[in-house]
Amino acid sequence: MARIAIGGMQHETNTFAPTKASYLAFEQGGGWPGIQRGDALFAALEGANIPAQGAIEAFRAQGHQLLPLTWAAASPSAHVTQDAFESIVGDIERGLRDAVDRAEGVDAVYLDLHGAMVTEDHEDGEGEILRRVRSIVGARVPVVASLDLHANVTKAMVEHADAMSIYRTYPHVDMAETGARAAFLAMQMLATGKRPIKRHHAFSYLTGIPSQCTFIEPGKSLYELLGRLEQQHGCYLSFAPGFPMADIHECGMSVIAYGFDAGKLDQAMNAMVDAVESAEKDFALELFTPQDAIQRAMQLGSPGRPVIIADTQDNPGAGGNGDTTGMLEALLALKAQDACLGLLIDPLAAERAHEAGQGASLAFELGATSGLAGHQAVRRRFTVERLGDGRFTCTGPMFKGFRMQLGKMALLRHEGVRVAVASIKCQAADQAMFRHLGVEPIQQRLMVLKSSVHFRADFQPIAAAVIVARSPGPALADPAEFAWTKLRPGVRLHPLGKAI
Image (cartoon, rainbow, N blue to C red; front, side):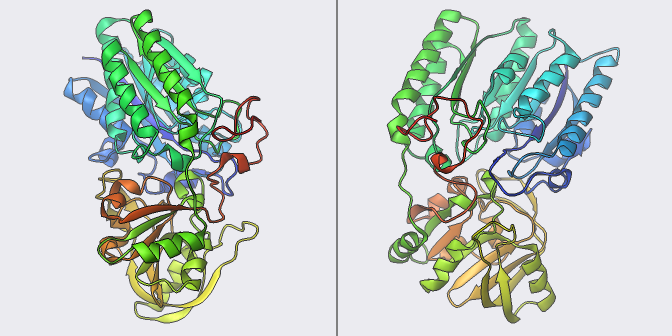
């Protein structure tokens, strides 16, 4: 039986976003559990599709002893503040030192990381975490990590971790499965006493996150190929399309590989790299204006077969605050019927709705709470149809088992348009978020979701069509529109585009 330390810190950093991730953001979790320390970690993650939970179950199934450190996550946003990073990582370091200093010591370390965290002090948050962990446990102890599909995998991350495993689905329905894969890598090292050979390749083009979806091409075929290459060559492969909203030197797509036969590993690696290079032109994706998207949805959708519109550029899962109003203004201007938008993050509006009570009709100024230039609140009279406390458990394929705490929520209606308002930001990726307010998604004609891709896991099966709209917001769908300052020279800012 081995003694395995387990902890983590997840944050996806959009360096162009309006709001930083403070310590409070990690305490709130943004749909994920708040900061967990010690044994409380196990109870908080139990039953949830979270990487660390997958690793916990895999280690326990083989009888290993787990040493819980600290685990934390927060909604994507701008940089993680120095205070938040040092407080949480400091807790992980102290817990790990205590474990190492005991007579029994530590045999391996598993970390649940994202791979695209940028802090006020560190361009490569995960590289810094792994460096600190390695400095504590030394070269003898295996260190493994699970990473998000949107990881910007850096040289430092590859150097300091013995192995890393990356999600293979977007929407991320395999988060727990990925944690289990990382755990199996650690257990293989413990059983054999050997460390795998490493390979890492970074690509020279960026893709917008809506086109990275694995339900569509080219992602679908690329990940199918990845699985075949693993089986054929007996190695571990991971492909990360990257997070193209982090202005750092090593932002971008990458492939990493681990194995014990250098020849076979190189064959698999080269085949995967060639496939991703060849797929560049296929990552382009058609985007619609708010007006065009809604008009198409009104024509194609019907109660029982709604059209789903992704308000991708205000996706809280990519650093947006969920408060832009371009899509809502278009819904109202076009007098959409049987339409629902959510989640609009506006704690003051939610509070006013609770004060007024269900059934009340009053004037609201909705949204535009972030102070982004050019964004205006929607001023209309809305009826308060339903109130909620924001506490519920998700049921969809990606967020299954997540126990949400989104603060006060309210369902507001103006003519044929309803708005699901929440107090704590979280992207709209699970039908339970609307059912909490009495909205059955399948009964709508159209739904506008502040999400880029994650919504597809739970909503695409009920949709007559899925449309991606480009309404103004901070999570730009085209990386070429960002004002890059730190990205390495030679990277094309979108498929087949110009190099920086």
